[in-house]
Length: 552
RNA sequence: UGGGGCGUCGCCAAGUGGCAAGGCAGCGGGUUUUGAUCCCGCCAUUCGGAGGUUCGAAUCCUCCCGCCCCAGCCA
Image 1 (cartoon, rainbow, N blue to C red):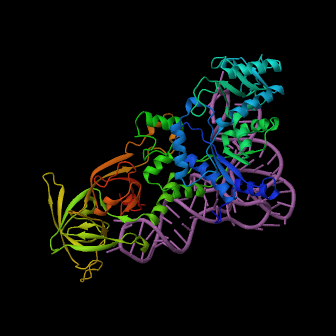
Image 2: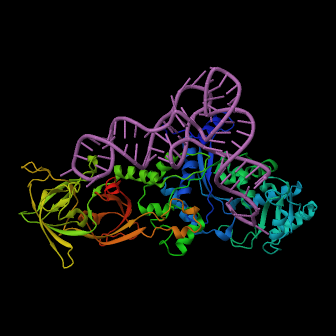
């Protein structure tokens, strides 16, 4: 990661910190709460945090911000680790957990109580809300605000001992109920939750809030740059307040950047969960999901996702990136890395009337890179071509097979349409054509060149395959702005094609291997459902198509 | 109408007083055994608006406009 990277305010700031000597080794962290699967927005945060550490020779921690056990689970902890690794990153040292610092947080809470900077408040949630005031009106001090230190200590110890019910009391910082920054109106440090925690079990009946935990986690770990999203900007004064008033071993600094929004997608964990729960998709890793697991199953290469995140840039201005940019990064990577193969989506029987005996063709696996090698394909007289590639008659725009016209079978001979047979409904079910060349790769001797090139599969050796053609999950550019995002779903986001035919070599495709099916797009062997006996390919992304858009 | 942010091409985004990078999208043209790729060219006299400072401003100052975030015992 030494190539010229575009400058952004984070890199500029860190460079300045390094040069001024205020920071010697850059330490960042990716701090997900294990309450859902990671999505494309997290991928951005991951590339920012790991990328910065990488660029400046520092380190990046993976730390689970597990302060709210009721919403978290081991399943998410596992999936998050897998996703980070799959994206190509390795965190420094062991996985870290906010929960492993709970005892320290508790001591620091006591420290604030002793300094008269925190107190136990008995107000109910509703009462606390009314005491908090509004955006334009100051709040009022809690009647419990001035309890003696010893009383606060005793009460807080009782909270820890589990003497109170959920919600009965909280520990709050004593800051300023009239602050124009709502976060400073005596924020809550601890709440009572008699819940089993996935890491600490039943050790704790009280849990620290995000605000009381995050900065201190950073301080404990020696994080130098605590990078988060814009909505936490208002929390920074509080973040700093804790760091100033607590005997922490290190002084981290919070810097905010604009989260990534991508058109035609949603990244709200709540809504993504709804898609899963209501079976609108098959799971968190459905290929249409914007989750890392979903993109992976869709065939999006990790390198393409990383490249996309870099191309998008990092700034402080809110915006929505056109998903076409992500798709472009995927195509760009796959064009270079995916071997070519042939697949006929809607098979149409084709008979070569004058082919005496089968030919064994040697076809390159990549048009521009010889290192991909080649494969042998048998071209007999019985083949399948795509229904869309044949018409009885057509204008000159149509560069495929037409009766009396010529087309080249990819990697093989040039043929000329002779006749066709139809079923009772008038559908063409069989095309007859004659070869007008006998040597693969040559042009017809009469000088009449083929109009184009089409893909084909041997009728004898071809393999039946299931093709799942995916499209955008949403029909509108900004579903998150819809009153009801689910009403904006794209009804055609999945089309399953059962009778497709692929070339025989694809029986050896490994799950997750991506191919370019020529003239169609990039397809990945499904991570879970693909087998040699019953091949299943997911459409990763179609080839760029500037023709059908303008020619219907 | 309290506080905090943000406004540079259709979408992202560099630029931090010296005369508007790049990517995506789009539009022309060329090459091509993928209507793909690749290649070439075009695409902001202008930086939300109006004033001001300066020899000179997207960059500094003033006012105005627009958008986003904050009133969880979520993160």
